[in-house]
Length: 290
Image (cartoon, rainbow, N blue to C red; front, side, top):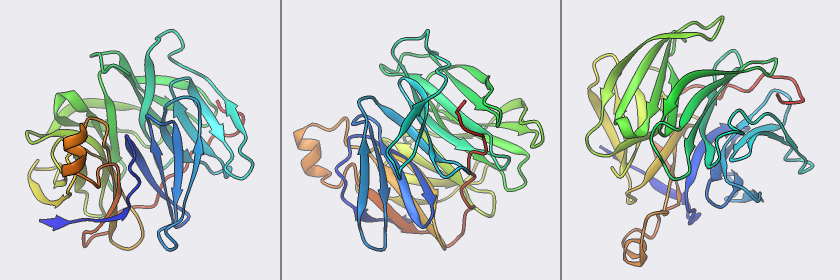
C-alpha cells in the first residue's frame, strides 16, 4: 500500500481528466466549467472558465486543446483564448455532457458521454478520426469513464462506472475498430472511474467512493497494490515524469461535516509508485474540428 501527497489544494468540485503534457498537468473542474494547467515546479495553476460544464481536455498535435462539454466538441487555444465549436453528436439528447476521453496512439480521440443526472443508458462512447468523422463505438452507456490501452496496443480497456467493471475489447490499431467485449476486473470497494496503464500492462484505477487508486493486473484481475488518499471521491489518474502518478479528486457530494473530515477533497495529489507509464497520445486531427 502506498500513499499520496496533496500537491495542490484546489478545492475543486469535480476535478477530473488529468493529462500530463509539456511538463505540466492539465485537468478540469467539470461542474465549475474550468480548465486548469498546473506547473508542479512552481506550484502555479492557470485556469480558464467557460459558461458550461467541461468534461475533458486533450492536447492536439496542432498545439491547441480539444475540449468536450455539454454543448459538444470544441477546440481551445490556450495562447489566445480562442474557442471554436465543432460537432455535437448528442445535440438531440438534452441533459447529456461529455465525460472522460483519451487518444489512441494513432491520434484518434475516444470520448464518452453521460446524462447530467446520471440516468442509466443515456450515454455513448465515440471515436473521432483524424478527418473529423465521429462514430459511435459503444451505445447505451450510463457513465462513460476510464480508457486505457495495453502496451502492445491490441487491447482497449473501458469503464462504464455503474457496472463496477473494467471491460476489455480487442483493438485493431490500424483501423481503430473494437470487438470481443469481456469483463477483466470487478470492483466491490467503490466505483471505477478514470484509469491509466503502466509499462508492465497493469491498470491504475481511481475508485469513486473507495478512497484509493487500485492497481490491477487485467490478465488475472488480481489487485497488486493501491494508493490510499485522505479523500473518498477519487476520480482519475495519469502518469507524469519518472514514476509519478497524478491523481484528481472531488468534493461534490460532501456536506459541511464531510468537508471538515476531508479538507483536501477536490485536491490534486501525487504518488511515487515505482513504475513508469506512457507519454500522452495527442489528437492528430486537422482544424477545424471536426
